[in-house]
Amino acid sequence: MKNGVPLNVIHAGNEDVIRFDLLIGCGQRDQEKPLQAMFTNRMLREGAGCLTSSQIAEQLDYYGAWLELSSSVNYGFITLYSLNKYFARTLAVIAEMIKTPTFPAKELSIVADTNKQQFLVNSTRVEMIARKQLNTALFGSRHPFGRYAAAEDYDKITPEVLRAFYHRYYHSGNCSVYVSGKVTPDIICCIEEHLGSEAWGEVTEKTVPATIPPVTTKEKRIFIERENALQSSLKMGSFMMERHHPDFLKARVMVTLFGGYFGSRLMSNIREDKGYTYGIGAGIVSYPDTGILAISTETANEYVDPIVTEVYKEMDRLCNELVPKEELEMVKNYMLGDLCRSYEGPFSLSDAWIYIETAGLDEYFFTHSLDAIREITQEEIRALAQKYFCKENLIEVVVGKKV
Image 1 (cartoon, helix red, strand yellow):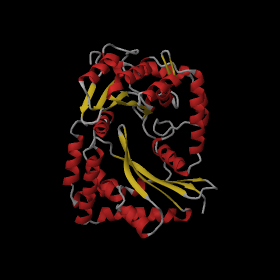
Image 2 (cartoon, rainbow, N blue to C red):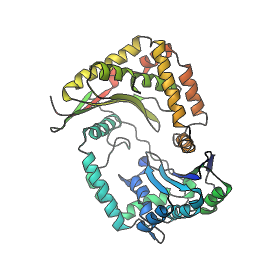
Image 3 (cartoon, rainbow, N blue to C red):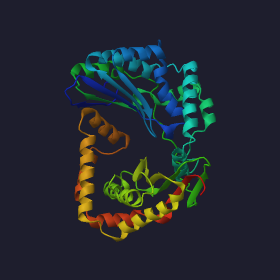
């Protein structure tokens, strides 16, 4: 647009509905204080310009619009769903929120307290404890991906802390826009008028956060006792390749076969055969510049060790034996069907292109994904398993009752 903000238009669909996404290039790894990125994004709807939080909510409700605010490791997201005929009115509210948030102290206190109570509840769940502990074990407690907020951090969030983050990152030089659905020329003109005609915010050069290398624990197993736990949560993880690595797309097929869908090796053995758990899964969790092979399940306390044994057995099988052709074809069909289902509508197409941008991938990523699924061979599956399934590097985190 005129002010340099990229506007990505996905014209698809027959319904008179629009999805509008504003992406802000800042997230968890850019914050100086815990929770700063999340609360800056979350508080946009609590007051802007001359509008109070209740007025913002009432106007969006009146026009049948839906607003979602979220943040990730490296981005903040503002997503609006609106009927075409009311888009100009709903976007006017969103533009006010984006350009002139007030971060009112009273509303912040209520939002922070609500989130703190939810945090305290989640902090008792064995699954949540195990997930955080695995990341801390892999990255170290000083790394932004291994450091987590504590209850007292919710009391340290002030309007001044949020304004500082907002002024540093929320401006027209650090964002992009996606609009999808039945996009008309009037819709595009409306976006340009509110967000693209001139620079807004304190436009500055984005500072790149200092790179902190991971400091991985040398412990093989970490056990955290929870005396009242009905089940234990088991997480196993080790570093793997990041999304730009040439092996990534085919390694995803290998990991899906291992533990990424209902018919996977882990599910067939540990759930169907042994009955140790209701479900177990494995996947590659991607972060900027790295990735993690993560295996996760919840089970009765006495089954933790047998499950770990079976996970390693399934790794050995993939390293030593060729996958039967029928099984590989089933995985390929599942993954191809999943891709088709995921990107069949205008809003899911928007998700696909937003993923491309936020992950720093090129426009051919999904084409290459299809090629990798179709072309991978039994021999490549075995070679990838031999290369990336290193049992010695897997950290085991168990949270539950001592048996």
